[in-house]
Amino acid sequence: MHNDVEKILFTEEQIAARVRALGAELSRDYAGKNPLMLCILKGAFVFFADLTRAMDMPVAMDFMQVSSYGAGAVSSGNIRILKDTAVPVAGRDVIIVEDIIDSGNSLYRLKGLLKERGASSVKICAFLDKASRRTAPVAADYVGYVIEDAFVVGYGLDYAEKYRNFPYIGILKREIYEK
Image (cartoon, rainbow, N blue to C red; front, top):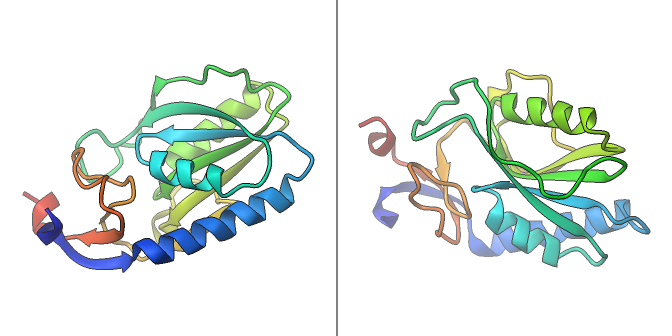
């Protein structure tokens, strides 16, 4: 499976260093608070686990699963909530933890939904940001790396439920996803 990767963008060591820095930044910004860390499944689960362990403060955790891709390589533009929060967000400082922002459509809708549900604040922490692909008016408040427009896998990111377990982030060869 590693042969399906054209190039490694970020090594395991680079990822770990950046996650530690994001954890320290969030700990500083939310000192004295108890934010609700909201992991967007499935892609963000690896980043979420590392990030919350890198935060030196109490945090509450919950999970949502939102889909706009299915098995494809391009967002359908529609959002479906496959798993909703178990913890009420009303009155909470919510930090959405996402693996990657592409078009931003899903996060734009999700952020609006959480505000409608009464969250005190909603911030976005994304490990990767493909800013050049943005079509929705949404931006991450905390970003690991801004990347080029490439199909990336590893560190929780997948293509058709494969490659999530790679310890690095790499660019998937075009012939893999254009079959």
